[in-house]
Structure formats: C-alpha cells, structure tokens
Amino acid sequence: MAKKTWKKFPHPDKSFAYAGAALEKHWARLHRGDCEPFPDDDAAQDAWRAYHAGDFAKAVEIGLAAGPSGINAANNTATSENRVKQKADLKVTKFGKNDGAVRAAEILTYTVIVDNLGPSWADNAAIKDVLQTSGKFELLTAPRVAIASQWPVRSTSFGSVWYLLDHQLSLRNSPINVQDLGSVDLRKYNVLILPDSGGLERVLSDGTVEKIKRWVQSGGTLIAIGGSAAFATAMILVIISDYGYLTMLFSNKVHYL
Image: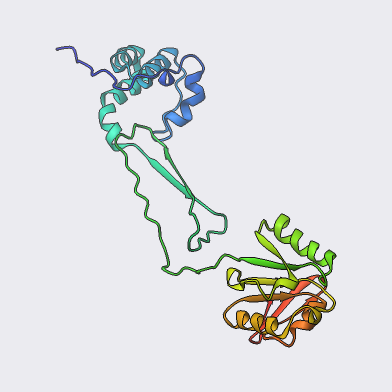
C-alpha cells in the first residue's frame, strides 16, 4: 500500500506546541467540542501533541504505534481537514452601555467579542452586525446656561450654583452681570439662572423684564432661587427653591432638578 502523503499544516506557530504539562493544562479548551478524555499513556499524549502542532504524519505514526490509547489521535488526524470546515463553534458576544439607551447625536460605542469554542479552526469567518432600532429617538438640545452674577445677587448663592454646574455636572456656563441683562442677547442661551438676591426690581427695568418674558415665551427656561423666585412670580415661569432643590412649575407641570 502506498504511503499516504500528508499536507503540511499551513499555519505553523509555536503557540500550537504543547510540550510537557502544557498539553494537559490546555486539554479542556482544545477538546471542548469532542470531549476527548486526557490519555494516560505517554505515547498517546505525544501523538496528540503532534496533532495539535499540525504534524499529522507524525501524529498518525505515533498514534498507531501506541495502540488503542493513541488510535483517536490517528483517526482525528485523518478527518482534520473536514473538522476545520464542520466543527468550528463561534460564540459572539456584544455589549455596550449599561442602560442600553442611545440618544440622537450621541456617539454609540459597543464591543463585539468573537470566540472560537473549537475544536477546529474557523477560516474566512465574517461577522455582520445589524443595529436594531425602534425608530424613535428623543431629540435633545444641549443646555446653554447663563448665570446672573454681581450685586444684588448674593455671592454665596451664585457660588453654589456655579460649583454645581462647573465641578459636579461639568456643564459649561456663562456668568453674566445681572445689571447688563438688558443689553445681553439672550438668544445665545436656553437656560437663565437667577441665584438668590435681594432687590432685582432695582436693577432690572420694565424693558428688561419684558425681554426676559419674551425669551421664556420663545422657549427659554428661567430658574430662580430664593429672593429672585419672588421677583419671578410676576412672569410666566414660577420657580420655588425648597430645601436646596429647585422646583419648577410651568404650564401646570412640576419638574424636579
């Protein structure tokens, strides 16, 4: 009978060599698919080492010489070409944000992990990922915040608001001298915060008050605290500060910030 000619393994790599105790250490992973028991016979172990290293001719030779304990290594070698195509077992895992929520204009970042559970190679594998969507997105507008400052705004109240936005929320904001509100283009902002104060009526003219009212009616959000809240009751938006929380009442709806 003519001696069988074996094709040389096309992917030689030292990582496929399992010398000594390395074979038993990696055995469960290598044989997760066929559940082959680890052989006690040293010759059978050598046959399997040759098999996993891609030296199939040597695996058959040693396996047949080892007798019953090495016959599986020889048989697996004879079918190894089919196993590459038929026995690869791919596991695909995808994960992203913990809450799973994605909003419009937000960068979506997620991770795809592909594992081959074996027992054979997976050649020319391609993973196609299709993003599922409900077709509904919540369109949000980034807050552009202005904070009134300077007399008669109380510095402690201004400092607390500024620290909350700048250091705790990392939210960009623009301090504006409250006495200059009449000349400021409020269209640059969609949120105006009036910290606690005493006597806003002395620095805000009727024209400035009407300007703020029109800005609120156009969609701007006014937040007032303490004494400034009392001043704001005459406008469209009524805001009350209660126990350190800002409670906003607008169109009979209550929101907590």
